[in-house]
Each structure stands twice: as C-alpha cells, then as structure tokens.
Length: 503
Ligand code: NDP
Image 1: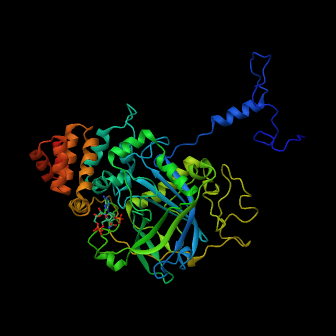
Image 2: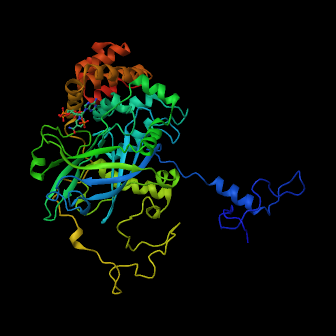
Image 3: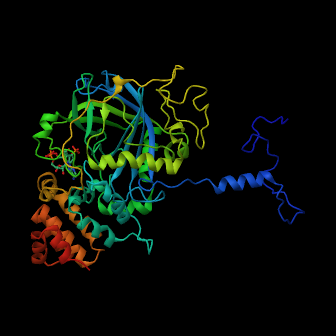
C-alpha cells in the first residue's frame, strides 16, 4: 500500500512505480513485453482520436441557461417554455462548417449555432446556423455540396473550381452565397453573431392547435464582422481566435447572451403566404411576419474538459420535446436521419449516455439495452419490451403531436418556381446592404471566384446578374469578364446556361 496521497495509477487503478524508464533487458534495451504499463500507455494513446465530424469539426462550446420572457403557451405546450421566468440549463456549441478540426476560426464559412436544452421532458436540440437560409433545399444534394467545400480528392487541396462549379449549377444557393460572401461570412467572434433555426418547425399547444415557427437568436453583444483582409490576417495571427474569445469572455464574467425572437404563422396564414415556408433558401420577411421576443439565452460556464464536453457533444435536430415537432422542410427531414446516424458512427450507439448528451432532467426509461460502452446498469432488471404487465414504463398518448393533413403524389418533384430563387438575394443586395457592405461583398467574391476557371466565373456571374444587374455587373467587372456575355448567360434557363458553359 502506497503512503503517498496522490499516486499515479494505470487505467485500472494500480499504482505506477516509474513513469520515465521503460523496463529493458539491460540498460541499453531491448524493451520487455512484460512492461504492461508501457503497453497500456502506448495502446491507449494510439486510440486517443475519434473520427472527426464530417462537417462542423472545429468548434467551441459552453454551458448556460435559457430563460422564458414572454407567454408562449398559446403556441406550444413545451414544458420548458411554460412560464415567464422559467430557466432551463443549456449547452451550446458554435463551429465553422467545412474546415478540419485544426482549421482557422476566421475562415469564410457559415457558423454552426447548436443549443441543447436539458428540459424536464428530455433533451431538445436546436441545431442551427448563423444564417437564416441554406445553399440547397434538398438533402439529396447535401453530400455533393459538402464535397465541393472540402478538399479535391486528387490533390487534397481546396478547389475554387469545385466550389463554384457546384454553386453556379445550383442557382438556389445564391441567397446563402450572398450572405456568406458578405462580411457576415466572417463573424468577429462567436459572441457577435446571430443564430437562426433556418428551418421552419412546428409548435403545437395543449389544445392541439399547431403553428409554423422560425427561431432567431439575436446577439445582445451586437453584430460584429471581420472584413476580408482582417479575416485573412487573423488566420495566421490567431487561428483559434473565436474559441479563445468565448472561453476568455466567460472566464472574465462577461457572459454572452442572445435574445430569442420567434416568427410564427398559423397554418391558414402559411397557405396564403407568398413564399414556400418549407423552403430553407428563403426567409420570412420581417414586415410580413414580425418577430416576437420570447426568451434569453445566456452562456456562463466553460466546460472543464474539451474532449469530454465539446468534442463529444452530439446535437440532433431529431431531438424534440412535446410541443415542438418537425415540418415538411426537405432539408430538415434529411437532417432528422443524418445527425443521429453520424453520431452513432463517431461516438457509438450509446452516445446519448455521455454526460454532456445525457438527458439530465428526465431520466431515460427506454427499452433500449446493451451495445458498446453501455456503462450504467443498462435499465436494471425492468422489462425491456412493451406491452408488458410488470409495471414497466408506458407510452403517454397526451405527449403526441396533432395530426397534419398532407396531399400530393409520391415522386421526385423538381422545384416549380426557379425564378423565385433570385428575389430575396436581390433584395438583400439592393435594399438591405449599405454601399460598404456591397463593396466588401464584391471584393470577397472576386478574390475567391477569381481562382476558378473562366467558364465557371461566367456562369456564376450570370447568377449574380439574375439576383440584381448591379451585382452581376460589379463582380463581372472585378473579374474582367465580358458584360454582354454575362447578360446573355443570365437570360438563359439554367439548363441552357449549363450547356453553354460546360468543359
Ligand atoms: P428587413 O429589412 O426587415 O430585414 C433585413 C435583415 O437583414 C436585418 O434585420 C438583418 O437581420 C439582416 N441583415 C442586415 N445586413 C445583412 C447582411 N449584410 N447579410 C445578411 N443579412 C443582413 O427585410 P426582410 O425581412 O424583408 O428581408 C430582406 C432580406 O434581408 C432577406 O431577403 C434576407 O436576405 C435578409 N434577412 C432577412 C431575415 C429575415 O428573417 N427576414 C433574417 C436575416 C437576413 P437580423 O436582424 O437577423 O440580423
């Protein structure tokens, strides 16, 4: 028995006598296989890394709370939203999307904005971005889209041809491309950006009336962005600047907060709405659906261990609580599958038991058992099937969601209104942005698109032109392209334009 208080041990608690010298046959070696401490230490080190997230690999997270500030019981029966003043513990993670785990925080990219609410009815995850829209509206395109944002399979280099080839052949991306290449594509820190659900979700109340909603977390720190040159400089000066900023602000006691505003539509209003509310490439204009303030998100506690709490954090848009449900948004429907699936791959089938992911305030009473790394009593001796007559947990019909009518033929339906895709991007460019915003947008695009081949530049400029003639003209001029050619390409259908600009 050791008399020391804080003795180094191996993984199974056995004291270690020497952690500097491997056991060898004589002072010059070789090393003995019987040095089991060395074998255990090397073997565990060899397995320290888990698969990197395929998207959102680089991130930072913190704990805090969400507080309700307005009565929303007319819209949702979610218990954590049931009372003004009610607080629920949360864990939030912010991230870039396309870069690897070691990539720079100042890269031009959307930022992930994921919040896990540890409610008394189980965990609710809202897995959004700092942009209210997305590049594509169909999940079938998602792996292709992400491939183009990552590295070329032959060279392992980022490839502007891949990047812009896909986007210029996917015109619905123009709205998100315009936000991404504005200075909002390089937020100053994670504290100085908004978070959006981007998708439409369904809220339903105790009377089983339902509503379509979108979430907007507005930063209380104010929006602050980096210009293109500032982001470039930070990439080498401090590649982890946003991770550092979040941690340091919380350590200083400067707790970042966001005001949650909701846009809410009744099913009747949604039917007459000018935009398809399930199309994630569109926003709901504020003037038509004024956002209402409903709560505050505050982050006030740093994690103790990055790997345990941030790297292993797993958010899934499929984690709903009673009162909140999915909408028919196709991208959301794809994500309902994909997030859980990727966590099972990355963390294993029992990732829901990792403390940061565990349902802290509503104990699990499921029939799920066993699997790799099931470390608790696994549901004990209780029945693991339903129906049973041994007093096992029972389903509660009162927690179900109201039925929703659907119509239409099963099939692969192309988008019916392709010209709509340019309207909101054009409004952003011409009505919302200032002259400085527009100048930065054009310079940021010219710097990036300039790396792609000419035929792709021409095709993408036609898309900018369709959003707004001044937009297309400014980028085309910056790239030294023939304006008449860009205008002619803009007049073509997407299929004609693709044909006219193929390799
Ligand atoms: P509004 O004038 O009511 O709202 C414009 C909103 O644009 C602002 O509230 C701000 O959103 C956001 N914004 C400001 N500057 C930028 C920028 N450089 N890049 C991206 N967004 C910016 O107009 P509408 O609601 O009619 O929307 C007009 C356009 O504004 C939309 O087509 C869309 O591109 C953009 N927008 C709209 C949002 C919405 O939900 N309606 C949300 C975000 C952008 P915020 O207050 O969220 O910071």
